[in-house]
Length: 108
Image 1 (cartoon, helix red, strand yellow):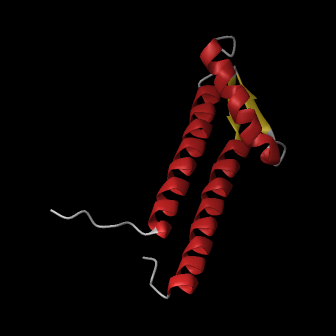
Image 2 (image 1 turned 120 degrees about the vertical axis):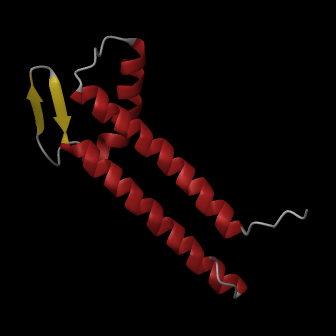
């Protein structure tokens, strides 16, 4: 059985989608743990919040944060997840255009 070669475009798209999955996954965990009122004193939750604070920086004060009885609903996290997904798709499309222009082969 012969293994089919993956184009640089496909490899790039897979790497970008993996990075997006990691980013959106950590942001989703932040959203769920804040919504559930997780104890921010635990090491895991502190590490998660510290990591995602960096990802949240550009989106921090877009919407107000709703707090009810220890439960936090962060609209900004949902915006960040959407924006990172859109950015990933734009980057993949740009790579596709460049790959197609360089090789004359359809990237998909």
